[in-house]
Length: 286
Image (tube, rainbow, N blue to C red; front, side, top):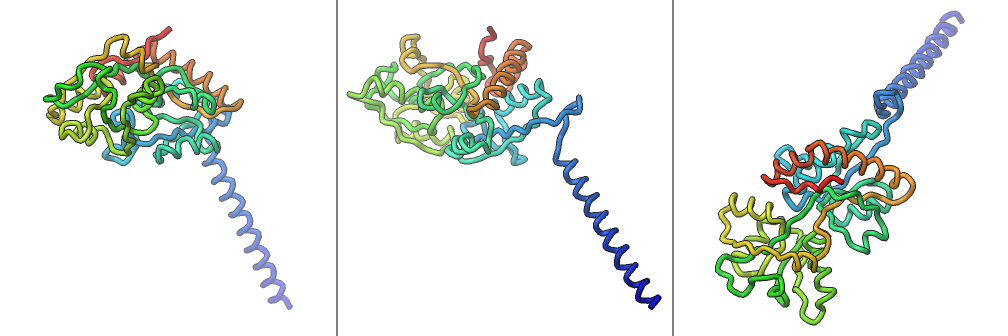
C-alpha cells in the first residue's frame, strides 16, 4: 500500500514539474517574440517587401541579404523611429502589391514611380530619390537623337519601375505611334546588352545608373540627354515608398515622412546616393 502511494505521489510530482517547465518555456518564448522600445513599450512590427531589382536600387548581395539604395534609405528612416521593429522580405514584384493588399507587408520599396492607378490603392511616401532620365542607345545608332525619335521604337523594362511608368504615360498621349514596350524580369545589365546587340533600340534609364554600368562593363552605349520639355512629357522624376492604406498606414506614413525629412536635411540620404551613384540624387528638403 505504502509503495503504491509513493508511486502515485512520484507520478504526481513528475506531472507537476512537467507542467511547470512547460509554462516557463512558453513564457520565455513569448517574451523573446515581443520586442520593446527603450521606454518599455511594445514595438510595432513592419515588414518591407522588395523585388530585388533593379540594381542598385534593390538587389541581393553576396551574403544573400537584400541591399541597395532603397533598402539603405528605409534603414536610415527607421533609425529615427525606435517605436518600430522592421524586417525585409524579397518577393516577386507582383507579390509586393498582393502583400500590401492583404496586410502581410506594410511597405513596398522597389524604385516605385507614381501613377494614378496605384494612388487609388496605396499611400505614397514623400520622394526618396530624384531621377535624372537619359536615353541609352548603341554607340553606332544614328536614328535616335531626342525623345521624339523614340516613337515606334522598341525597348524593354521591368514592370512597375519608374522607366516603365514614364513610357506608359508617354504612350497614353501618343497612341497613334507608341513606343513598343517589352516587359521583362531581367536585370539592367542584360537589357543594356540587348541595346548593344541591336535586339532593342533604346533604354530609358537614370543617368547615374547608366554611367555606372558603362564604366563597369565597358558597354558600347552612348547617352542622349533629355530636354526639360522631354522630361515634362514623361511625368514625375521621383521615386517613392508604397505604404498600405488604412488608419495604421496613415500613421506609419506620417512617421516615415517626418523621419525622411530629417535624414534628407542631415545629409544621410545624400551620403547613401553618393555610395551607390557617385552623385547626389537625394530629393530636395523643403
